[in-house]
Each structure stands twice: as C-alpha cells, then as structure tokens.
Image 1 (tube, helix red, strand yellow):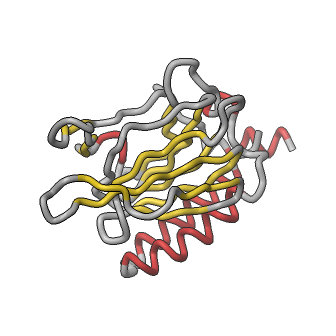
Image 2 (image 1 turned 120 degrees about the horizontal axis):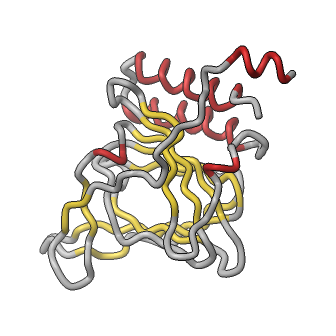
Length: 198
C-alpha cells in the first residue's frame, strides 16, 4: 500500500503550522487538506483500522518530532463512544468511514457543564474543528450500532501525550493522558519499496 496520500497530507499540515497562521485560518485551510485526504478511502493501512469489541481505538499515524501536531485514526466499534472530554489544543476531525455524532458542551456561569446546541451528525467526508476558542468539550460516538466507523484526526500537539480532562457527570474534571493503541507506526518514508511495488 502506498503512503503517498498520508505523506502529502502531513506535508501540507507541516507547511500550515510553519506558516504561523492565526488559528482560524489554520483550521480553515487544514480542513480543506483533511477533506482531500478523506475523500478517498484507499490509503489507511489495515493495521490502523481494526476495531476492538471493548472500546474505541486511537492509532497514531504520525507525530511531529517537535510535538507541533499529530495525525490519528480513531476506530469506533458499533455503539462505542468517548467520555465527555476536552483537547486543550486545536484539532480537526474528518470522517473516513461510517458516521459519528458529536455532542458539544460548555461551562455555564456556575462552572457546570451543559449541552451546547444540537448534536452534530458527521457523515462520511465531513470535517469538524475543535479548540479552546471554537469549542473544546464534547462527547463523540459511533452513529451506528451495527458497523464500524473511522475518523482521521489532526491535533496541534502530540495528543496522546498531553494532559487533558474528562468530565464525569457527578464530579469535577479529571486529568487524563490518552496515549495510543499502537506501538508501531506506518513507515511513511520507505519510498524505495513503494517504487518497486508500482
């Protein structure tokens, strides 16, 4: 399998991050790049698209050496969902397969968490943004109870290594570090093998 599409996407995001754009422009242009990546479903290696029967999977596809961004494949088994959580950095979510439902939350004047707006259905090809400036607290779930959904996420940090928060219904926010499901990465740079295979 060629990694050309993922490699090209990573290069586009690196250029955007290098440009020091205001966040709104970074999210806008990053969403266009992510939309192009998820427009075709022929590039994600099988190893990074496998569901678990117990909980959603978070496969690291790429982490910038300076922790400026990361690219992650989220694999949702039927009916699986996240807890309510935040990110603390900008992020983009693009649906590659299936569909997801995102429920956004905000803190009211008393600091309590309340639902913000209607649930958002993200279908195949849709891209959404998160960040502390545009809305950072949500719960995401697979829209289907009978099939797998996969989304590709890009974040403005090594998201599996930063301290964030989950928001239990009955208490204060709790810090957590998500980590990743996988211990190996796709080899994006073995160009000689790709050229021999083509």
